[in-house]
Length: 197
Image: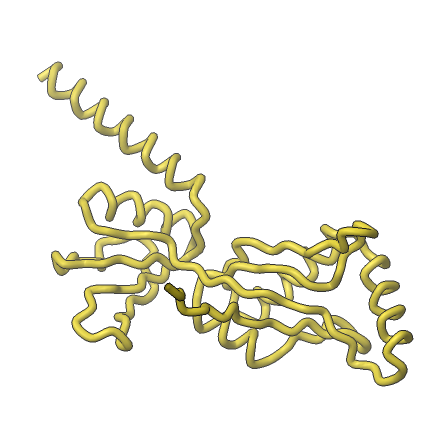
Protein backbone atom coordinates (compact mmCIF):
# COMPACT_ATOMS: atom_id res chain seq x y z
CA UNK A 1 0.00 0.00 0.00
CA UNK A 2 2.80 2.38 0.98
CA UNK A 3 4.84 1.47 -2.10
CA UNK A 4 1.85 2.16 -4.31
CA UNK A 5 1.21 5.57 -2.74
CA UNK A 6 4.90 6.46 -3.21
CA UNK A 7 4.63 5.45 -6.87
CA UNK A 8 1.46 7.57 -7.28
CA UNK A 9 3.18 10.52 -5.58
CA UNK A 10 6.15 10.14 -7.94
CA UNK A 11 3.80 10.07 -10.96
CA UNK A 12 1.96 13.17 -9.70
CA UNK A 13 5.27 14.97 -9.21
CA UNK A 14 6.42 14.05 -12.74
CA UNK A 15 3.09 15.29 -14.15
CA UNK A 16 3.49 18.56 -12.20
CA UNK A 17 7.04 19.05 -13.58
CA UNK A 18 5.77 18.26 -17.10
CA UNK A 19 2.95 20.83 -16.80
CA UNK A 20 5.47 23.43 -15.59
CA UNK A 21 7.61 22.69 -18.67
CA UNK A 22 4.55 23.11 -20.94
CA UNK A 23 3.76 26.47 -19.28
CA UNK A 24 7.16 27.80 -20.35
CA UNK A 25 6.29 26.99 -23.96
CA UNK A 26 4.61 29.75 -25.99
CA UNK A 27 0.95 28.74 -25.95
CA UNK A 28 -2.33 30.51 -26.62
CA UNK A 29 -5.87 29.19 -26.27
CA UNK A 30 -5.63 26.94 -29.34
CA UNK A 31 -3.72 23.69 -29.74
CA UNK A 32 -3.31 21.34 -32.70
CA UNK A 33 -3.41 17.57 -32.36
CA UNK A 34 -2.72 14.77 -34.81
CA UNK A 35 -5.14 12.22 -33.43
CA UNK A 36 -4.99 8.69 -34.78
CA UNK A 37 -6.68 7.25 -31.66
CA UNK A 38 -10.03 9.11 -31.92
CA UNK A 39 -9.53 10.66 -28.48
CA UNK A 40 -12.60 11.85 -26.52
CA UNK A 41 -11.85 15.59 -26.30
CA UNK A 42 -15.04 16.32 -24.34
CA UNK A 43 -13.27 15.33 -21.10
CA UNK A 44 -10.74 18.18 -21.46
CA UNK A 45 -11.46 21.06 -19.08
CA UNK A 46 -12.43 24.39 -20.68
CA UNK A 47 -12.80 23.09 -24.25
CA UNK A 48 -14.85 25.58 -26.27
CA UNK A 49 -14.61 24.28 -29.83
CA UNK A 50 -13.03 21.56 -31.97
CA UNK A 51 -12.58 21.71 -35.72
CA UNK A 52 -10.83 19.53 -38.30
CA UNK A 53 -8.48 20.63 -41.03
CA UNK A 54 -10.69 20.32 -44.12
CA UNK A 55 -8.04 21.43 -46.60
CA UNK A 56 -5.96 18.29 -46.09
CA UNK A 57 -7.56 15.02 -47.23
CA UNK A 58 -7.38 12.09 -44.82
CA UNK A 59 -5.85 14.33 -42.17
CA UNK A 60 -6.14 13.46 -38.48
CA UNK A 61 -5.34 17.04 -37.51
CA UNK A 62 -7.80 18.61 -35.07
CA UNK A 63 -7.73 22.15 -33.66
CA UNK A 64 -8.90 22.55 -30.06
CA UNK A 65 -9.88 25.97 -28.73
CA UNK A 66 -10.05 26.57 -24.96
CA UNK A 67 -11.50 29.27 -22.74
CA UNK A 68 -8.18 30.10 -21.04
CA UNK A 69 -4.47 29.67 -21.71
CA UNK A 70 -4.13 27.66 -18.48
CA UNK A 71 -6.74 25.12 -19.64
CA UNK A 72 -5.02 24.87 -23.03
CA UNK A 73 -1.67 24.22 -21.32
CA UNK A 74 -3.20 21.58 -19.02
CA UNK A 75 -4.86 19.87 -22.01
CA UNK A 76 -1.58 19.96 -23.95
CA UNK A 77 0.21 18.24 -21.06
CA UNK A 78 -2.58 15.66 -20.72
CA UNK A 79 -2.66 14.84 -24.43
CA UNK A 80 1.12 14.51 -24.61
CA UNK A 81 1.18 12.28 -21.53
CA UNK A 82 -1.30 10.02 -23.34
CA UNK A 83 1.02 9.92 -26.38
CA UNK A 84 -1.22 12.04 -28.64
CA UNK A 85 0.90 14.29 -30.85
CA UNK A 86 -0.01 17.87 -29.89
CA UNK A 87 1.47 21.34 -30.12
CA UNK A 88 0.42 24.95 -29.54
CA UNK A 89 -1.18 26.52 -32.60
CA UNK A 90 -0.03 30.00 -33.55
CA UNK A 91 0.36 32.18 -36.63
CA UNK A 92 3.03 34.74 -37.36
CA UNK A 93 2.60 37.98 -39.22
CA UNK A 94 4.08 41.46 -39.47
CA UNK A 95 2.62 44.94 -39.19
CA UNK A 96 3.27 48.50 -40.29
CA UNK A 97 2.00 51.74 -38.83
CA UNK A 98 0.82 53.82 -41.76
CA UNK A 99 -0.35 57.40 -42.07
CA UNK A 100 -3.96 58.17 -43.01
CA UNK A 101 -2.98 61.76 -43.83
CA UNK A 102 -2.25 63.13 -47.28
CA UNK A 103 0.60 65.44 -48.17
CA UNK A 104 4.27 65.54 -49.15
CA UNK A 105 6.14 62.32 -48.36
CA UNK A 106 8.72 63.99 -46.10
CA UNK A 107 5.94 65.64 -44.07
CA UNK A 108 4.27 62.25 -43.58
CA UNK A 109 7.58 60.64 -42.58
CA UNK A 110 8.26 63.41 -40.05
CA UNK A 111 4.74 63.06 -38.63
CA UNK A 112 5.22 59.30 -38.25
CA UNK A 113 8.57 59.75 -36.48
CA UNK A 114 6.99 62.28 -34.12
CA UNK A 115 4.11 59.90 -33.43
CA UNK A 116 6.46 56.93 -32.77
CA UNK A 117 8.45 59.06 -30.31
CA UNK A 118 5.36 60.39 -28.50
CA UNK A 119 4.90 57.22 -26.44
CA UNK A 120 7.18 54.62 -24.85
CA UNK A 121 7.69 51.22 -26.43
CA UNK A 122 5.53 49.53 -23.77
CA UNK A 123 2.72 52.10 -24.02
CA UNK A 124 2.47 51.68 -27.79
CA UNK A 125 2.77 47.89 -27.60
CA UNK A 126 0.09 47.58 -24.87
CA UNK A 127 -2.29 49.93 -26.70
CA UNK A 128 -2.02 47.96 -29.96
CA UNK A 129 -2.24 44.55 -28.24
CA UNK A 130 -5.44 45.66 -26.47
CA UNK A 131 -6.86 46.86 -29.80
CA UNK A 132 -6.10 43.45 -31.34
CA UNK A 133 -7.76 41.61 -28.44
CA UNK A 134 -10.85 43.80 -28.69
CA UNK A 135 -11.07 43.33 -32.47
CA UNK A 136 -10.50 39.57 -32.35
CA UNK A 137 -12.78 38.62 -29.45
CA UNK A 138 -10.08 38.35 -26.77
CA UNK A 139 -7.62 36.32 -28.83
CA UNK A 140 -4.15 35.92 -27.38
CA UNK A 141 -1.30 38.02 -28.75
CA UNK A 142 1.60 35.70 -27.97
CA UNK A 143 4.39 37.93 -29.23
CA UNK A 144 4.60 41.54 -30.36
CA UNK A 145 7.82 43.34 -31.21
CA UNK A 146 8.58 46.65 -32.87
CA UNK A 147 11.61 46.87 -35.12
CA UNK A 148 14.15 49.61 -34.47
CA UNK A 149 16.10 51.69 -36.95
CA UNK A 150 19.67 50.37 -36.72
CA UNK A 151 21.23 53.82 -37.02
CA UNK A 152 18.99 55.89 -34.75
CA UNK A 153 17.74 53.02 -32.49
CA UNK A 154 14.27 54.61 -32.69
CA UNK A 155 11.09 52.60 -33.35
CA UNK A 156 10.57 52.17 -37.08
CA UNK A 157 6.79 51.70 -37.05
CA UNK A 158 6.88 48.07 -38.15
CA UNK A 159 7.45 44.72 -36.50
CA UNK A 160 6.35 41.15 -35.91
CA UNK A 161 3.48 39.58 -34.02
CA UNK A 162 2.17 36.10 -33.25
CA UNK A 163 -1.49 35.29 -32.69
CA UNK A 164 -3.13 32.00 -31.78
CA UNK A 165 -5.80 31.51 -34.48
CA UNK A 166 -5.73 31.79 -38.27
CA UNK A 167 -9.25 33.30 -38.36
CA UNK A 168 -8.05 36.22 -36.24
CA UNK A 169 -4.94 36.68 -38.39
CA UNK A 170 -7.15 36.78 -41.52
CA UNK A 171 -9.47 39.30 -39.84
CA UNK A 172 -6.57 41.61 -38.98
CA UNK A 173 -5.15 41.40 -42.51
CA UNK A 174 -8.56 42.22 -43.97
CA UNK A 175 -9.30 45.22 -41.74
CA UNK A 176 -6.54 47.60 -40.51
CA UNK A 177 -6.98 49.11 -37.04
CA UNK A 178 -7.21 52.87 -36.52
CA UNK A 179 -4.83 54.00 -33.79
CA UNK A 180 -6.07 57.59 -33.97
CA UNK A 181 -7.29 60.11 -36.60
CA UNK A 182 -3.88 60.22 -38.27
CA UNK A 183 -2.47 56.68 -38.10
CA UNK A 184 -3.57 53.10 -38.56
CA UNK A 185 -1.87 49.75 -38.18
CA UNK A 186 -1.92 47.36 -41.14
CA UNK A 187 -1.26 43.64 -40.74
CA UNK A 188 0.32 41.28 -43.25
CA UNK A 189 0.93 37.57 -43.61
CA UNK A 190 4.41 36.23 -44.16
CA UNK A 191 4.74 34.79 -47.65
CA UNK A 192 6.26 31.32 -47.46
CA UNK A 193 8.60 30.85 -50.39
CA UNK A 194 8.99 27.35 -51.79
CA UNK A 195 12.38 25.77 -51.17
CA UNK A 196 14.69 25.76 -54.18
CA UNK A 197 17.16 23.01 -54.84
